[in-house]
Length: 254
Image 1 (cartoon, rainbow, N blue to C red):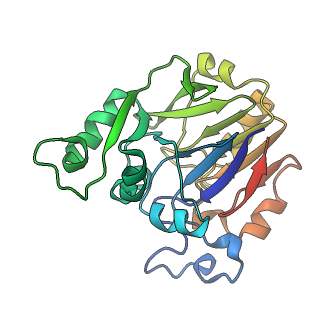
Image 2 (image 1 turned 30 degrees about the vertical axis):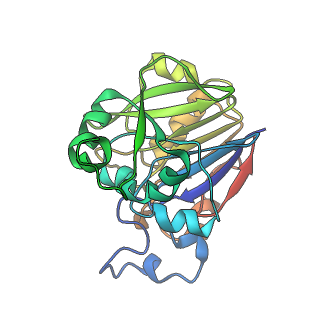
């Protein structure tokens, strides 16, 4: 059995957005408070995190997560990677925190976080990582096979991941027919859905629902949600009965 914890379900600015006067930012509904997008996925005694954004420290504290077995990255954008320095407590326990991501992302992170990736004159308090390069081939995390899913975030390649009958995709705009085949027969799909209006690099509601209709998962949870989606309670009422808005702290089992 898989357990998924939604650590964050918001866009790159989160909700509330700094300096915004949008009414959603002043909502008293806790489901309208969204940190940057990330999940924890657990099975047996293992726990992996997908994406390590700028809210990573607080997400770990909020969920009382004291151990992880590694981090999977979807792509290199800051809202998915900027929390890497806060891997330090886990690095002290693990020695090197395993990270899984394609070479392009590794190259980008190495430039931005040179002090983490370099062993030369390394500061004693800096985190350390063990790099595992991901491509299209399935790979093992402990005793579980994971299938990478290649998609496009405008002109940037992003990666989703399938674990058994669960798949996680964020920051997707388009996906090839070949990669869609890897997403058939899902019990639960987590998919980015920014807002109702079209966007150049993210799925909107109509596009996300069209993809769901094609893939036919039993249930879908939308994530990477912006203030333009409106209030959680109102927006969810517009969705089909098997499609839901995820929210921070939501836990599901598959």
